[in-house]
Amino acid sequence: MSTLLSVNNYHYPRGGAEVVFLEHNRLFQSIGWDVVPFAMQHPENLASSWSDYWVDEIELGHDYSFFDKLKKVPKTVYSLEARRRVRQIVEKAQPDIAHCHNIYHHISPSILRELKSLGIPCVMTLHDLKIACPSYKMLTHDGICERCKGGALRNVVINKCVKQSTALSALVWLESQLHRFINTYADCVDAFVVPSHFYLEKFVEWGWPREKFCFVPNFVDADKLTPEYQPGEAFAYFGRLAEEKGLSTLVQATAKAGAKLKIAGTGPLESELKKLAADLNAQVEFVGYLSGESLHDFVRQARAVILPSEWYENAPLSVMEAYSLGKSVIGANVGGIPELIKSGETGEVFEMRSIESLALCLQQYSTMTDLELAGRGRAGRDWMAAEFSPDVYRERITNLYSSFAAPKTVESFGNVIASSKFSNSDLGGKLSREFSNSAKASNPMGSNLDAVAIDTGGLR
Image (cartoon, rainbow, N blue to C red; front, side, top):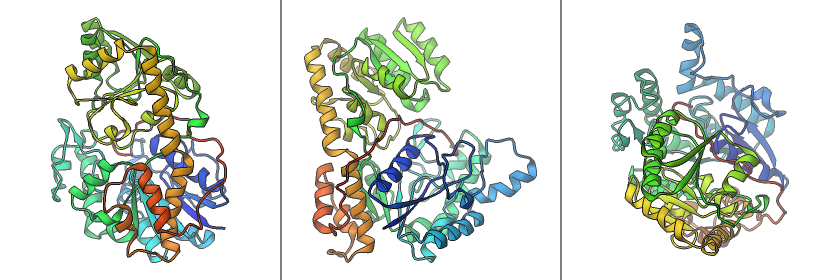
């Protein structure tokens, strides 16, 4: 039986990265792997027999005393406690491979050096742009930002990129500078898993070697979500109400198109958006925070789901779930969003920040027949079932893992996986041909992704 050390700051479904982390663990447990989680102590964590090994909680937003902060702040940069505890859990569990997700600022990247010293192969899924951009998103007060490209990380402090705080921005600057100086990620991570081609190409553009990256898209279990293909009258947005989500553009486009819109979610922009909708006399209904089946029903009642983002989204789970629930998607042409939309088949792509471009899509969808819209919803769901299923995801990851344990048939796994842009279906086939087939999974799946990504902002 193989053993996986699975690492993430939080051990509960706090956001999209945590959902992927927990579902990844369940997928491998379902085929007999021994999955050993390593996380940070937190009152909302799911129970685990391994929790005694986990690092102490660090939440910089908490009201710690001055002396507690002095003790905790260095841990967010380089945690000796985390190095010690990951060594202890490795000695006990004897994992064959480690897979890290979000580890910054709580566990800290210090564990990567320890895993390397212990001879444990390490894979890391990049849910954000952190290894290039100190503040994760390549986003600051004036929109999308690439000022740190080329190594000018001081810009994160100059622009106060983290919560408009000089202190927090300086902290992430220090952390990023340190780990670049000691080459933590490049030296200690054997392969980076990236869920979108856009992120992969962005990392390469910023100077990372292509062979370090492996494109493996996220997954959704469409069979666990009941679709509704009959379109409703109103378009739908669900998620955090924040500046980078493009909601001001969406409300203005809705008013221009004379369409109906329902918005599910909360966030710092809520009051401003309500005022904007009222000022424009737009037909916008704010339904508040929804989750679980209530959120699924909200999506099922939609005409289509809108993703008007104005920042470098990676591979939004919200798009995949919308398709699985039988709905077409209209998305901005930014980040990894266009990779998840087949224009004219499963949805439409519009020009980011363009009220006119989005309004045109809304007008087009408002005049389409129910039959046409249902066809797009079905096409999206079929696409998810064929190429973004749990089985396909697990096979891709298993083949990646096996490249570290079994003799390779090519010089480097990276030369196979990342030397060119594959389509989603090409990737799984290529891996299967090149690497050992012994780890392929054929077991049926249990339940799967039944949550929508929740955004967490700033220093996590």
